[in-house]
Amino acid sequence: MRFLLLLLLFCLPAPAAAARAPNVLVICADDHAAYVTGAYGNKQVRTPNIDRLAAGGIRFERAYCNSPVCTASRQSFFTGRYPRTIGVTQLKTALPDSEVTLAETLDRAGYATAGIGKMHFNSDLKHGFTLRIDTPEYRAWLVKQKGDGSLFREEESAKKDSRPLFQPEWRPFKDPARIWLNADALPIGQADARMEGTFFAQRAAEYLEQSRDKPFFLMVSFYEPHSPFRFPLEYRGRHQAAQFAAPVPGPEDDSQIPAVFRDLSPADKQGIAAAYYASVEYMDKNVGLVLDALERSGQAQDTIVVYLSDHGYLLGQHGRFEKHTSYEEAVRAPLVIRYPGRIGAGRVSRAFVELVDLVPTIHSLCGFPLSGPLQGRTLMPLLAGKTTKHREHVVVEYAPNEEAMIRDEYWKLVYERGVVRRSDGYDTVGPLVPDRFRLYDLHQDPAEMHNVAADPANAATLVRLRDLLIEHLGATARDVAAVPQGDALATLEYCVQARGE
Image (cartoon, rainbow, N blue to C red; front, side, top):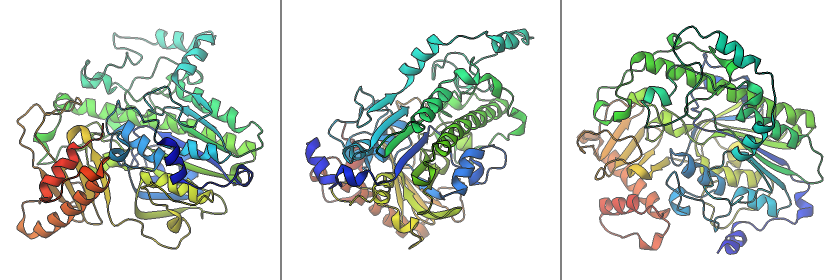
């Protein structure tokens, strides 16, 4: 099956031809919301390295993940296929060996391949990476390090009360939310030089500066700024909680706020934002280490560079601190592509794109013909300036909550089956009485505060979007032939249940 997929996916050029192809560098963050980036208009956060990358290429204003959960999103954009099609819709699901990844196709084309950092494969498989470095390698390296501990002694001597100086062990859903969301904006008890993210960036820099006789594909994937929003001792105090406003939930949010967040005070919410911003800035510093190494290597002009996150993150909007939902802050992700000489500098696209479009786009830029079971669509017409549009709508699915959304230029429709309690830690505890359909007029209500699904004036819009959502969920089901025909709502419910696990 896997060999057949390889044959169907690409008729790749021989390795000799691939030797003339560009290098590919993909830098991925975890839980980085687009709106917490300087290049996306945030004046408070300091992200000079992501900003300079955007200044040298194209920034996508409306890039959407295909699932607001790490594993499903990553394996989707790494294969160019939808989560429900590849059967990876849950956090702990392993990517099947039968699926073909970007690393595998580039390896077959003669590329040197390396994956450094978080991948969420949930198995020991390398999925096409010849070199693989992750947390076990970091821990082994850390054991061998020596130092005088001066930073630790300085921190200890500065202790004036009983409050902790460092982040405790991360225990989500066991400790109160303010602890595992780092509301005190505490650093990790490590100096920058000993941090895992810095280790990954340094290993990537070493890889980039090695000489080789064939192009490379390097993916560097940081664990930041995922909670508990880690940053080193040197970043303590980068942001003060008082600098942030605590978002106020909307008039219709109360019934759907997860119980785990209800005890957070306004001060807690401000502190969580301060910690998140500091973690983003630490991650951006490591992006800079990688980009600087690429420049020193002399290969920047011949390298496609992609920066993205697996999804976004809510920082108190709608009363939530998570991504497991369909609100814009959770599903819109940063996406930047730079390729000197092929993509004009400083460009901004407002076209609707999905992260599943990444694989066919990279293969197009590398000169590979597209065929077979890819479901993403190449962004080449956008990159070449031949069009300003790509998709009429985008679709996102969060299977653990049996939830899916579709949005176009002016409207968003969210469907929740609403017959089982959430088991992902974000249950509301209240009665199961959700509105199965929520419709938002994004032109009049961009913050998604008012569900207008019940307004008779919007009936045609609801039906149009519902049917488009049904069509997508049916077409991308793992076993398409098993999707029943007939009543539209019954089909939708079946598709949401058919997770392909």
